[in-house]
Length: 163
Image (tube, rainbow, N blue to C red; front, side, top):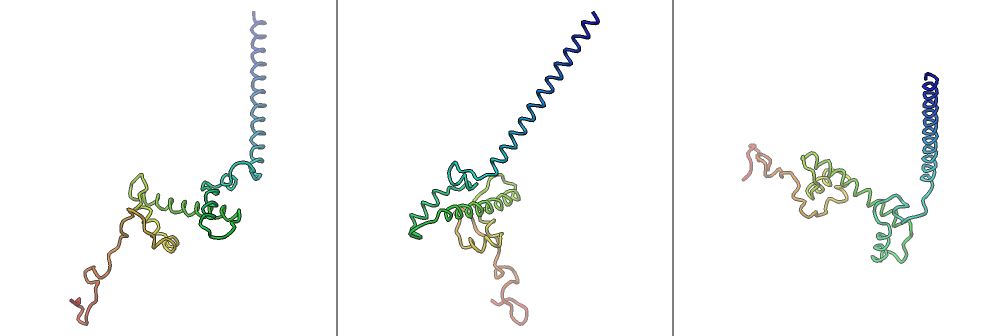
């Protein structure tokens, strides 16, 4: 009886060792597969649309078509639309990030046109380029002119405000 038990235990141990070995081999194969995927990702992808190849979310083809329709030039280079799409995507991400920060500061969960307006006017560079832009439902910029503040208007020699 003891011999049978020891044989069964040895068989169970052998089976466990084989299963463990198979599991390790499977893991090694998965690791090799991941390494190959990384190498493939390092190469330039030649399939898919131009937005995907450039790693952009903005539509490169549509931007190129609009450039041609606008008649900016007789011919539009292929890199021009990719570059413009990248710039537009970057600016959009910048504005949305700043607007998201303002939204969180105001303890809201949805970005409103007001938040976009405030984010543009808070950032010095965006203010420079988009300061004169009108945003629908953006509201009025905060700030009271100094003339309307008490004692903020012109004063005469006696220190009293002129009427």
